[in-house]
Image 1 (cartoon, rainbow, N blue to C red):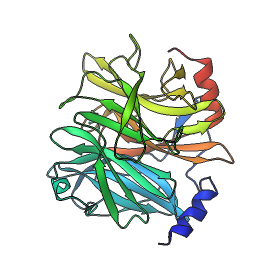
Image 2: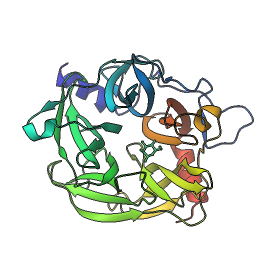
Image 3: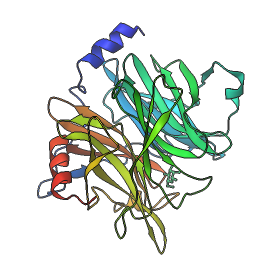
Length: 334
Ligand code: BMA
């Protein structure tokens, strides 16, 4: 795959005409609504998969490509590549991505999960939660979704939910992440870090954390690649509440300052989507809506959000960027 072709497609700056879409259901005033055919990817979609969820899709070469979290039937968590003509029906590889490592010490494998993918300058970068003496953020890249090269872990353990911005900010690569622990982390604040070279990360800034007595009162984590708008970076994120029956993962939104993204200007007091459908409430981990990617059509303002449901299957939700921005401003609580 020539780099030029990829660049040409991306320079259009919009998703494809057949981007996944379904109009808001008649009678609904939800700002974000689910695809009626959810889930789009079932748990046994590939050979030996236990579950496929928390995954990332992007436009690629006139179609769509993605990096999928596939937990197999031995319950190893790994990343698989997928391709699709319409962003809904996916052909996902049965075998995990075979990473190219430039340094021997990187070949140690524990697990990889919760990928995000972004087109940045000249290639697609992938970030994910990488098992390295505990979870931390792995970074790699591909030009063609065939050859994948691992760079370095961004941080020391423990960290999850590493999400790159789609362009440099103040001349530096920029990433959101969520420092954690070795387990199911009963806390979680989002931080901002910058890097001159995608390897060395620093100048860490606190962005936001849980809010008392809200749907995100236990922890927060960035979701899809932030979307640049006139009103700031639209950051769709997951927030977690602890109920008497365990964690509940919902999706909300915040607007971050364009030049100083650690400054949160608005943040939805209500969630945008919380686990309410059966496929979100029942599965390996009940009550989880976990967004990891969003296709964006700059011309129509439509977005299609990919989210993991109940740590088992993958769903789609739709909305208009302008509506979500206005909703976030009108219903904000920092
Ligand atoms: C988080 C991550 C996610 C998962 C979620 C709910 O800590 O491990 O991959 O979807 O828990 O189990």
